[in-house]
Length: 400
Image (cartoon, rainbow, N blue to C red; front, top):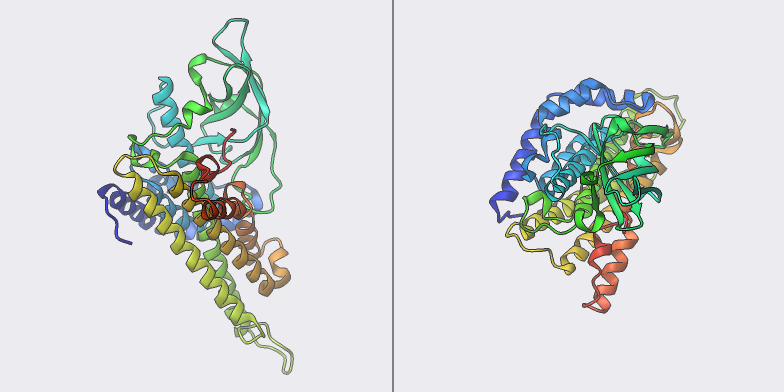
């Protein structure tokens, strides 16, 4: 694709530089991806390597838009999906924190390496005035699916209020307790646990209504011009692309290794000549390659569209959501097809192909990537071109 704006090109250039630096730590990342699947934790050395490569500085000044984000996320996910997932969460919620700071006037830490823990879609959290007539809040609640919660330094948490409806509060991560830990099928090292707070006092300056925080910012930095929830969905889809690419490569390597082993005469092998293996592997490879191309093109087009500072038309939001649905459907289909030729090894603990299959499977089940949402929105727009639901198009990543 031809990039028509300097901002988009700058973001892609920076993303490629980060990927190059991450490639120097390839062995460390791959070893930790396997180890963290068992331990449930990402090693400090891996976090340090990502930080040194610039992976946690994607949000600095809002210069890297969706085009840069999907490239970094897919590249890192191809060697360490859990680390890539946390990078996306940290990046997108750091951008949200920057918006929070501008809109609320609160001063956040200047360190661009701050790893934000954004926790969305809780129906179990509320804030009430500290005392009658007080502008300050007392927060109680539980926030589940808190990705990056073990590495995060800060958190933006959604709460329900009687006066303002849904809103967000900013708190130090240390002010929250871990109520429960995931025993996840995949992405086991993402720190995606349930966080809780009891009678947590929050000043009025650390609260914003959701309607204010998620307002459009067509004149803001490039990364903030695409709606926050849609931008996050792009990053999560990119993690799915990288994980699926790793699954294709991992299964191909296992088939090659299987073929190289000596076998008893007349007993069937499980190599590339096994009926259906070559066709299934090739078809899945094509699906993943196509999903990558569509995702990157969608992100590039969004960056190009918002670069002049104009709001995204509802029709383009719907189109982007359609393409995200297509990407997710293709990844899910490829993942399923590959599991059929991987066989029961996809269900085994400690097996590389099994880990990659579990990671990719979990990613494609995230609510933000639901294919049916994009397909339905697109179909309605086809039947009635005036029927475009911009709110639904950006995805269910925050309370309405």
